Length: 348
Image (tube, rainbow, N blue to C red):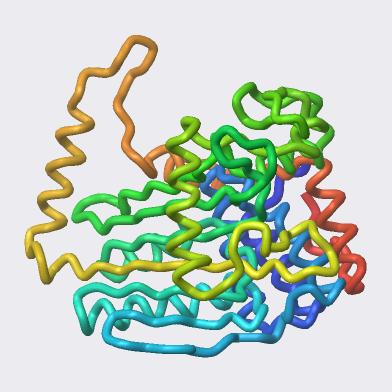
């Protein structure tokens, strides 16, 4: 398994995107967002997605130069049309609007339609938190999740993410799919020829739970906690697809669907905490300390809060490099070769 330094992987990925027709600064944004996920140990939303992005561009299913446009703006509310641009490009613009509107109004909600895959939701919520605001990010996705008691796909993994500014720590950050796991964990297992996945991740085409990777790849993901996850997925669909006026449920395409636009919708919320609680960060620091002071359960040596495992992984991988599974490595090089990009500079 190749191990590559984050800086080298970011530079090479940017080069591949530029060769595919993406603007230089946009290429850097996409590359940095993907590598950031790998650094945090969230490999399902990391660099293996670059191959799919390049394939989308090559097939003409996404416009690598589009930036989108504002549809409506009123108070702290804004609707954006991504015009089939790269998800990271559309989301970066929308997050900037959310921060601006929350600074002016105390709270903001910005929703985008006709967008594409935006990488890890954590990248966007964390950016809002770094401005001193509570940030929340949601996204609908390909309908590969059956509703509770169904066996046909109607929802995506529809992630929910919240990042909060704190005083003496990095942001508290929760990033979760409304399925047991993110879809890309199954795709990653399939691409790397892993024969089995853990139980509870997916069902086969008949709606029967399976641990066989091939059956899961051809089947559907399972909602988190049964009917609760199904309800959360629909909530995200309402906040994204319904609210934005964009595609909903089975109207969406996907990263691996050729000849059809993805048509994803994203929604971002920003809350100016200083308007409500000037001592917010001190109070949150106290809460985190109080939570972590709980006695560890048997088999554990400490209590962790959201974002701590990822931050520790990031420190380790920055020093030691990013492990890239062989299947992911081969897929990257193959997709980049379509645009004449060699693996030069990407040697493990």
